[in-house]
Figure 1 (cartoon, rainbow, N blue to C red):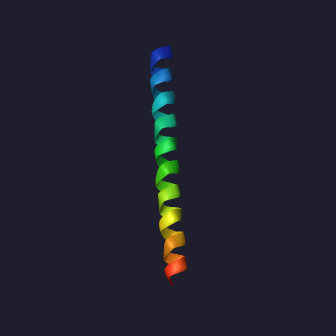
Figure 2: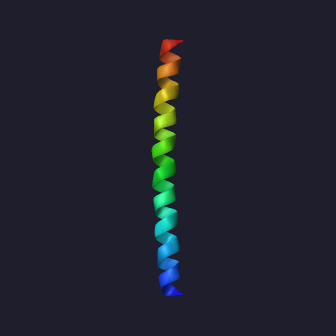
Length: 37
């Protein structure tokens, strides 16, 4: 049980950092689009 919890917590953390990376990349692209427009 404890191991499963640790694994799922690590997976959630990895997911969160991945989402943050995607968000920052999307924001950068959006800012570039705004500057170009």
